[in-house]
Image (cartoon, helix red, strand yellow):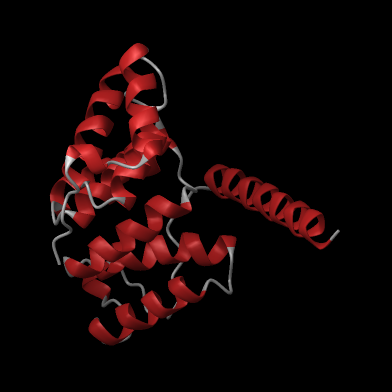
Length: 191
């Protein structure tokens, strides 16, 4: 379903404001909110362009890599999306948004083991993540319930990626910190 791009004169005030600010300071990180506004307006080409330009200035900016990967995915540019999202995951292995989109791409490409690994990361952070649980169910159905020995010997329904003890410790600390942050947010909302 292709979104129609509004004529230049009918852009939202927020887009116009962000475009002007970014024009004044091209090295600003305002390209991220501008890209988000473009996506909301269905202007994927513009979002892609501003993100690609921003990544020339900030090549390891994880938020921009994930945003560009998601835009590529929405545009059907799966190889490009996969490349940017995998780059983001290398820089930030616990980036849940990158894993969420990667899992979808992996399923679309029939790479169920990789999709399971991304779902595992999401479910480690939040075992009740309904979207990840639903995606895992789709993966299990499409792949016959699990991988065979020829694809790594993963037979259980919720495989854990192969990691070293030091990687597991880092991930465990990050997950614990994430849970602590989420608990603090819930407490603030409740009060």
